[in-house]
Image 1 (cartoon, each protein chain N blue to C red):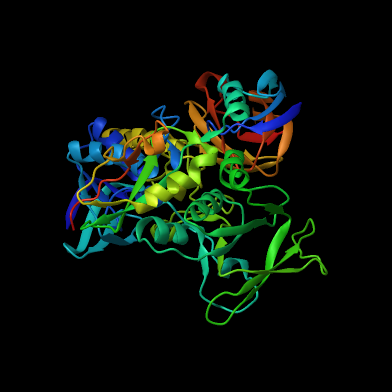
Image 2 (cartoon, rainbow over the protein chains, first blue to last red):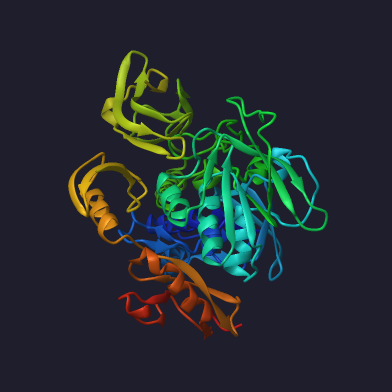
Length: 411
Length: 120
């Protein structure tokens, strides 16, 4: 059996950034395990630009952003095994993985970094009625076919859900000669970023229909049409508003779910709101020495913030490895009114940290208020707050007390 | 004239309320930074976009390599540029920054490779 100070599960943006920072901090005995044949994770297929504006001050494509980290990982001589699937992680941090080159691997780690990213919600999760023809894809699968494998998925396209990947794919397919007939979103507001609504839909005159969903999928071998309908405020289709739209392709962009099967096997407890682990301000799960960051923890909008979060994780993991433990985090952070979720869910009350949250619905002229008991830790005014945009707030240590739980509200 | 623009320069995506006459911007509100005003001014006079696509690769570990433009081109020329990009075929190995088309259609923008593709 092999022994490593840190095993990093997943060589996407979170895993790469964490590995580099660990190495910088003097943790040399590292191993990245990656399921695909190449490092880079989902960025490999995200060929559009707009990555790295915060981190590098330039607008890079996904592969370029990833390559900057991959080059550094290689220069630093960090061990990676690609084409390697992690099968199991135990609560004692024994990692079992399978690789064509190395066979079955068993690695005892002092620290395990969970950086597996997320996966897409599918038609099954929506329980959309209808037949089961070819031509129904999740946005990320269509993106993989078109951008990596040179397979065009269809010509007459309807998109369900206004997540960012769906919007990006609306533009991508239009550029490749497809006709995107419209984007249908069950919520009364878009779930993607405003800039993507503008540059992916409005630029190409692709209509966005809010409060609409697909109620029927038709076709035997190949999709021939979908039926859309308007929805009421409880997302129920309104009878009489159905419209049949001929199409050969339906793209689903209906949400992302942190990929936590391995975390669950290790005994990590998940937050039903984020569907990622409960973590403290060190990105540490309830199991000492098991950490999580990036989309496996909570789904991000911007890779720049994934990298930052993974680096913060690595700072803590390095401290854990070098000092043997991290300060206790007995205080709870609660999501109060209008707040969908918060990360971290536990804090020490003695150290600075970055608070991440999402609002539940679009709000104008509100304040994000962070309190511990009667004490106001932070108040930030916002002209607009959208569920599509993760809000991140640095919390300074001198504002904190170590004697009261924290609540985050939008007022 | 009044119109609300969604600034696409950065992920903030500011809703910029602009008052303008012709292509002359009189006032802007709602932008978090000066780029918002620059964006609106550009958008009124000559809207530009960068695009990303892919180009076929012969003898590579993948059949396609991703490409992008090095600077924004007039919005109205996007499909002309796509037509040129679609005709390109290059041979592996190719590396980030390799120029596939220099100064495409005379628009002062290059098509560059954004992924390393080694020989299969």
